[in-house]
Length: 114
Image (cartoon, one colour):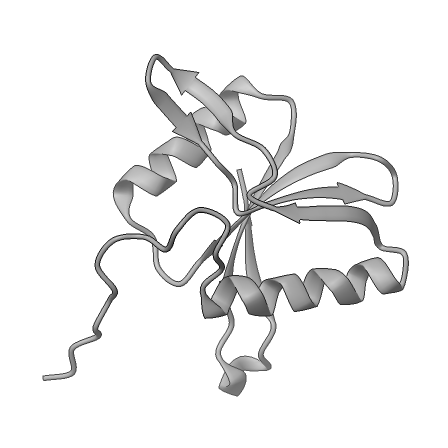
């Protein structure tokens, strides 16, 4: 039986996991060619309800000035999917989730928009 091991808990605020670090490299390349103007890891915190917040992995400003919130996932847990959907309903930003695409499928990122 093939079991995947997942880390318990979260990294400290401001610390990236390997997937987030890889995505930051991707965003840096997009910035270098002018596709985006700016990005910041855990740069904004959105209030969803009393004592309930959502912090997107990356705040990203596109070249046209539109602000996007990017969530980087190795896998989805139900609460994370609910939070991004609630945030997308409440805020005027574009919300995007990315997961790593297998190398056998060409590599890169799978993108889901909310």
